[in-house]
Amino acid sequence: MKKFKLRWLLFVLLFFLVYLIAGAVGPFIHYTKVSKETKKNFAASDCYRDSIGVDRAMLLETNKSAWDERIRLFNQAKERIILSTFDMRDGKSTRDLLAVLYHRAEEGSVKESRG
Image (cartoon, rainbow, N blue to C red; front, side, top):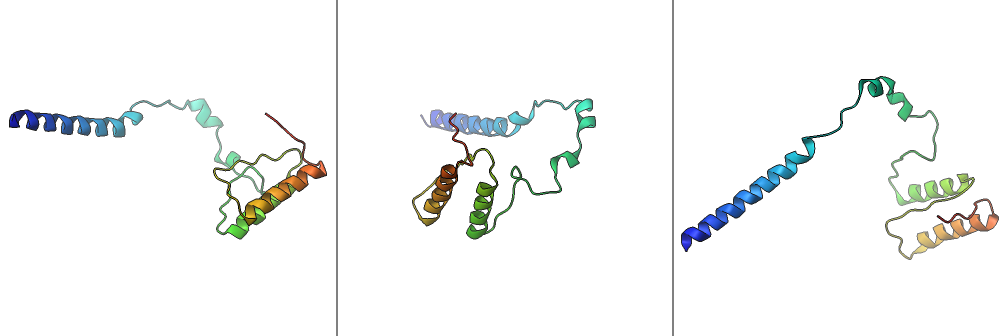
């Protein structure tokens, strides 16, 4: 009975070890090669702009800077505003944000879009 338990424990341990190794190495075994033509046509400078645009990432270190940036983006919108958030909780900043969004919609400067 003790040998059976020991073998079972070794089997589980070995299985777990193989599982970890396969999970760590498996995803890197095969991946798509980039063609020489694609490498030749790619320029890192195409990923950067000289001016600030609405489609770039920005590091916002404080809640105030995040709020200012949201308002700036809302005011720059010409056709529509797409607001995507993971979690929106009731609070002053959420109400203010929704009030600005509602105000922009009432102005008619942002067309309603349903998709």
